[in-house]
Length: 234
Image (tube, one colour):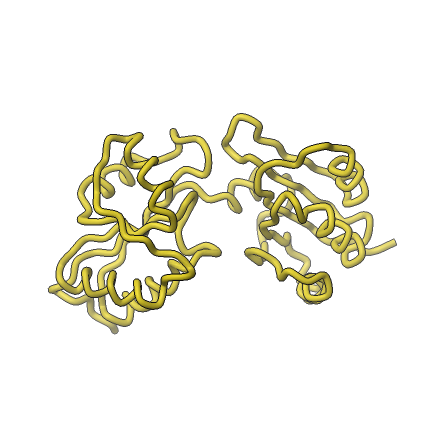
């Protein structure tokens, strides 16, 4: 059994609001106030969030382009007794986020880790979708090329679980057309966008109905959480 280092600090995994700032927890605010530094995906966005709550802390940039050398930097800080809070731009760190690498190395170095519960787009979308919640598969962001997207989704057909992934507004129509080819026109689907924000919306129906809905719109703003429950093709 691995033992935590007595000399190390603590790595806190701190969820931040995905839209509505009221969704931050009291525990998250306390940790952000008490930690020695905050490792964040975007220092400008994190600074704005911390300033809103009257918190001032040193910020360490930690994103997919810098993770290799920043992991060593953060781990050294932790091994020297510092308390570091890891945050993403919005939601729970490490979900489709480079933070999981930091957690993995921290575990290997016997650093104490505390994971705080909090805001998360995929779970919020799943609960509001009306689709089965007893089993689901989360795919993060799909591949870029149509052929690879189709292959990735086709491999999930036999699971009979709700399939969840993230998609950008400028690719959503193209991806829905691919989903129609893979799952058939009668698959149940929900698109969740602007979750917890002023224009929050859940678009529910069959893939045909969803396509008709989004193709009729001029603007499709906000990142999408896509949820699909496969049915037998007709």
